[in-house]
Length: 460
Image 1 (cartoon, rainbow, N blue to C red):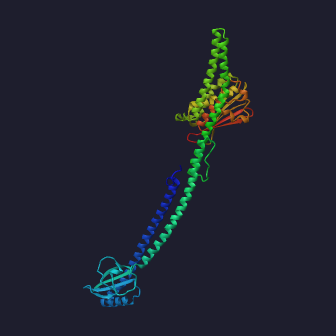
Image 2 (image 1 turned 30 degrees about the horizontal axis):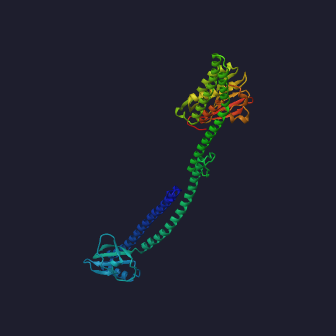
């Protein structure tokens, strides 16, 4: 059963986007609406006060009677219904003007047309006037103006708001739908890939859309996880096959020895010798399984909790010191050189690093003919360090370079030498645990193994 529409994250994202977009438009309109209203109201007050000041100047210069004449002339000549004026004497009796009966006040008045006893019939019923009283020499003077311009502007803004809001909702819905569909498509890509992996298609990967955003970043992380998972599964499958192939002979040989001992042993000594040979084979098999277990633990990252700052130069110096005599006893020469005097600090496990380089040196000693020169060196590089082990032995064919790191894999010429084929697998596991890269190169003649380590806090 699919997810209900309203519970889908992209749909909720689209609705949220549209609501946020609409709310933003409403807030901007409210600011614009009230700002323009305040500004136009202020303009009405300024024009009213200018008219008032000019009439008061008449009173101050020529007297109340001349003011009454001017007010009567103004009231009689006004053809526009947006202007009101009234002059009253000290007793409050109407002297002149085009309105009557407005109570005196000290502040601005907001008057409905229905509240005014008007002397004319022009205008609109919805007119509202902003008016103010001022004292004059022998009475009071009222001057006011209609807010019709303000009402027209507000009506226009509301019409624009309606059209703009409708366009905003439609545009927001379209944009939200586009984003939702695109996001849903990318979420479906995650879901389909993970579903395919759970169905056994371990090679399935999340397609990258290209913009390099956070979803692509998460997709890349998931793909890296799937790469690692595929590598582990293939390693387990290959290991199972290799174990079955490589352990079949020692198990068969062990059974034959025990069977032969049970049938043909003529004395306790003969039987004891057969048991000792069988125990040797069992010890070799136990060693193989112990190595496999260590490799599995390393590939799972179980030892990372023990990481600390390690001087790689000191590790290599200790390994070279121990194995110089071992190489000499085997007829080889081991040299060690550090081209950088500074400490080569990395984050890692000292014991595992020691085991890794010990395995590499032992591998060279075991598989190279006598009088081989084995050179161990450390070089500083931008952002990290390069540990190199080079020999002038037979080397490894280029076609075999990737295979030698597989579990239980052994070159044909190495099958006669002791070992279980897990030494280089362990080396690769330790290197991967330390975010290091291993390069196998032709040393012409011989083999050069380079291990590139990042500085502490960096990743190669």
